[in-house]
Each structure stands twice: as structure tokens, then as C-alpha cells.
Image (cartoon, rainbow, N blue to C red; front, side, top):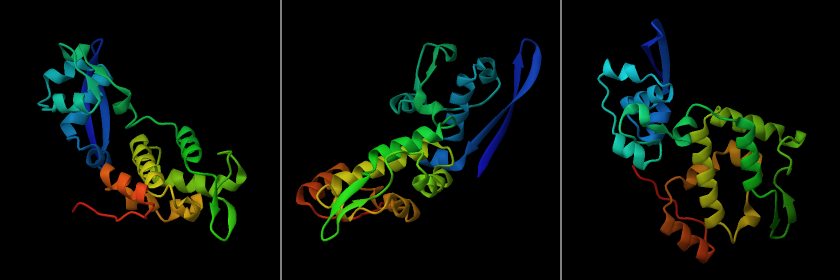
Length: 205
């Protein structure tokens, strides 16, 4: 679901409308407000004069702490960081390549020997189903990809002594297995990884 905002944009005495689409899941994942996102987007598009006509109340200190912007003395001197740009501009092929490079392509399974989990080449025909599934999951959203990669890193840390049981990549995607590791904190990762145990999954409600 989107929030769609039309903002009048005056450039060289010509009036334009700046259309800003904000996905609810972006706000949820980043904990931004609509004001936060709108403000950063306007700065990114260099529509500084618009800010005089809008009653936006962004939490600029938090946005800077989170790495979305480097604050200057005025809006015109603020610098929008890649962390924010990645929320609406992405390269899916690069995302899938990173996934394939991080997800083990083979493991030694107890009693089964070597199992191949996916082809090394992201563009291999045997990866087509997994690639299409991943595309439908992330829908070109860099922040969603980063969240999944973070969960995968947690899983590989926790299960480093049990990688022989790791799922085929396509099955891992179909089952949304990474979601089991979303709320695992660093201490739990370390404890379970050192003990060679599967994680005790806890969720924050």
C-alpha cells in the first residue's frame, strides 16, 4: 500500500507537481514517519523552497543517527546518504548475486554426502525459479533485501555447526525461512553458534 503525495514544485518559474509515493512497509521497516520520508525525498530532489510551504516535522537527529542524512547548516547543505536512496532505487540483479554469493552453494550432509544447494552462477538456468521467487519477495526493494541478508547472516552464525541440514536455496525462499531469525539478538546468535545448537526462536510482540 502506498501513500501518494503531490507537492507543487516551482523551478525556473514553471510549476510542477512532485509525486512522492511512500510504501507503508518502508515506513514500518525503517520506523520513519511520513514527514521523515517526505523531507528527505524533497532534499534529495533539491526542492528546498518547498519546505517553506510544508508543515513537516522530521526527526532529523534520528535520521542522521540512522545514516540516512548528514546534516548541514541549512536544508540546501544537507547530504542525503545512500542508505535512504536505496529505499527507492535498487538493482535486483546485484541483490540476487549477493544472495547467491552468501548462501552456501554446497554442504556436507550427515549420511548424504555433498549436497548442492544452488548453482554458483546467479544467471544459471537452474537458478531461474529461485531468482523469480526472490524477485517476487523483494520487489526491487533494497531495504527488504538488506533485511533478508541480515537474517541469513544470523542463520549462518547460529547454524555454523549444522550447515549440513541447510535447505536448498529455492526451498529456503519458498518457506521464508529467514523470518525465523528476524528477532534473534547478537547474544543469542553467539550462544547458539558456540554450542552448535539450533536457535531458540523468540519474537517481540
